[in-house]
Each structure stands twice: as C-alpha cells, then as structure tokens.
Image 1: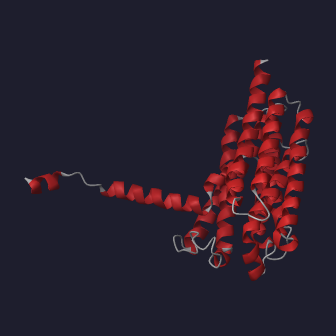
Image 2: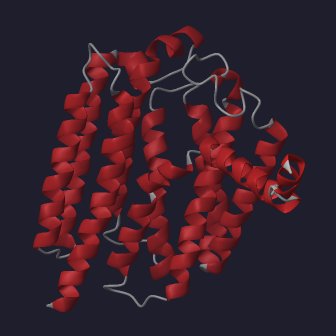
Image 3: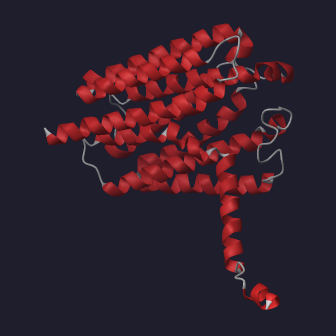
Length: 309
C-alpha cells in the first residue's frame, strides 16, 4: 500500500521542470540588468506620451513600440555595462556576487542577451519612423559609451543622466516627427535627477574606486561636497519639473505632484548622512522610484481632470 501511495504521488512533468528552469533563468537575467529599475525612466517616457497627445495626433500602437524600445535599449545598455564591468565588479565586495562575476551568467550568454535586446530596440525604433531608425544606432552608442566614462572622468554621472534623458526627447521625436519643443524641460529634469542620485549611489564605493583608479564625484571632491553637488542637481531637477507647469498649462493636480516630489527629494537627502552612508540604498531604491511613479500619476491625473472638465 505504501509503495502504491508513493507511486501514485504526482511528479512534476518534464515540461513543468523546463518551464521552471526557464523562469528561473529569466529571473536571473532580469536581476542582472535590474529590470525593476526600469521604473526610473519608463514613467518619463509615458509622461511624454501624455503631453504629446495634447498637441499632436497619437496612434495607440506607437505606445507599444515606445515601451518595447525603452525595454530593449535599457536592457542592452545595462547588459553591456555588466559585461564591461565584470572584472571590476568581481573585485568589489559589494558587487562580486553579481551574475557575471559569480558565474551565474556567462559572458557569452550576456553578449547574446545584449544583441537580442539591441535588436528589439532597433526594430521598435524602425517601427516608429525613419527618423527614429536613423537615430537608433547613435543612441545605442551613447548608452554603451557611458560604461567607459568612469574610467577617465568624474563627469560620468552627468553623462549617465544625459544618456537616460534621451528617453523623453526620443519619444517626442517619434510621435511629433520634430526635433524641437518644450520637452527639453522634462529631459533636463531627468538628466539632473538621474545624475544627482547616481552621485549619492557612488558614495558607497568611494574607497574601492580610489583603490582601483575609477573616477566619480565623491572620489574627486569627497563625500560631503559630493552630497552638496547632488543637492544642487536635484534643485535644478525640481526647477525643471516646476517649469513644466506653465509651459504645458498643467492644473492643480500637477502642483500637488510637485509638492510630493519636492518632499521626496528632501527626504532622500536627509536619509544620506556624510558620516554614515549606509542608507544610500534606501534612498536610491525607494525614494527615486517613488519620484518617477509620482510624476507619472500626477501628469495622468492632470490629464484626467482636463478631460472631465
């Protein structure tokens, strides 16, 4: 009877095991590129979509291509960064357990992932029009080049901000077919917002970066001055967010959004103490993702009120 019970116990099928294996593998790749951090930039692209449709006609299918382009570009850029930095990450106690240094993903597999992600971006860009197709390669070059900047300049944080700030501008070009417009305010806000918190994030690696000869604002100026520079950049970011209100004729919902974003930025800088940077990850992962989401929700609510009025 016992043997019959054991034999009758359902066992996972081969297909179920394969599915579980693929899911685990997919999770590992998502962890390598920190896929969840897409929340930092994607809301800015979607905010641009909302602002564009107020002035230009919008095809729903283009929103899908924009999302795919964002995912493809960011995945390719992050994958490239992980491959190029693998030997550095392997020496840093904080990063040595990342997927490539720890052997969870091989360099060859990572390169295949990068090529597939870049291909997705190029296809999505081509579907958004000839201009986007022509600009896609230069954008990828800029995104990839960022990975080398910390090897020769402490301005790498600003270059990262610039690279990511291309997202709103790229969406604007894709949907309006023009290269000029007030969307530069959103790009400026994203540039300084990203650069400011990247400086905060770099503070936790100051000793290691000095040891191996990497460049950053904290290495160049010290933690205290780096935090002041970060604060200045976030003041500029907030000013750019505020300027969007009159330029795009936003309503009261956006003013509430501005207040919340300002409070989140203040809290972020209160969390990080120059004498104790152990809470950098809290500021980086929680406050920054909240800023992006709050911005999107605020602009979406502004649009909803506009339509109901």
